[in-house]
Amino acid sequence: MNKKGIIVGVIVVAIVTGISVSYLSPSSETVNLDMGRTHGTISTAMASPILGDPSAPITIVEFGDYQCERCYEWFHETKPSIVQDYIDTGKANLVFVDLAFLGKDSIPASMATYCAEDQEMYWEYHDLLYNFQEHVDNGWANSERLKAFAFSLGLDKDLFESCLDSEKYSKRVQYNIQQARENGVRGTPGFFIVGPNGQQQIGGAQPFSVFKQILDPMI
Amino acid sequence: MVQTTKLVYSNFKYVILASIIFVSMLIGLLILSEYIFLEPYVVAHLPSGSEFGFVLIVILSALSALVIPMNVFRINILKSSKQKMGGGIFGSIIGAASGVCSCGPVGFAIISTFGSVGATATAFLTNYEIPIRIIAIAILAVTYFTTVKSLKVECNLNH
Image (cartoon, rainbow over the protein chains, first blue to last red):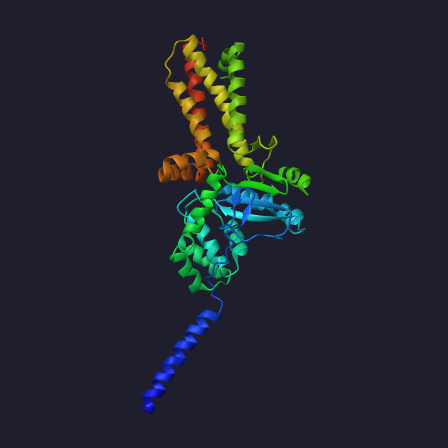
């Protein structure tokens, strides 16, 4: 009887401990979304985390595809100057919204970035994809490569793989694609510069001078 | 070869036609390939690494402007067959189609309309942009030489 009581007691303690741990420990796959987040006419609730100061007066909303070579050009040619002059200085921030349309690997690549966000490495993973971009659908962004990229960043392999394989963020990416369509984005990269007095659309991988001409009067 | 080309372009009408083809094709392709932007400001931009693509567009436009009027001359003046004209137009179209699809508005429209088939086609045209443009230039070059050869015979320029 006494022995039985001890066994029941151990089981109860184990169950209580298990439940407590699962509630108290931070879940790596928790999605922390602000469902009311908008920038101008765009709902960015499901988009990337904000790059830069969230209270900056201007937000640059970028619509992009990880397989788009023009997005690659913009990432390498124009974005560094924007980050240096406007984002690092707190004058503007940037949000990336997926318009994954170019090929079959475009949507998995976008989903992978949110799996990286679960481990607080969204922008690192985003940058990695644009640094290793190759031709559309040639295998550079297939499931195995996306997992290898995560491994190279030191992300938790099992968590990342379970997230990607379960297509946990499929609807999030679809929501972002829908935002692009609703806002009249007709190709990537596409931009909206959202300031205190309205928003201005820019289509294509335009040079830094164009962004400067729009951003400076808004500050 | 020079004699034949001079014969065609001695008629000012063909010089104008060649100029219209060159300018419209060059500007059109530069806009579609996103070397020139019209909104929000008119701006030209040549990203590093895309210089070769730009040069190919200039060559493609120049060859189209050279070959197409020569074939119009053959058809109008000599009432010859339209076969070589087809080669010139075909070369111009495949050269123009490569690269302009990619992630810009043209590619987006094609993929939105035709789905996965459109995506496969645009991916092919984007991935092989440079080789396709080189093939298009080769087709136009061959069309130019065969047109010159035909004109020599048809106009009795060797006699």
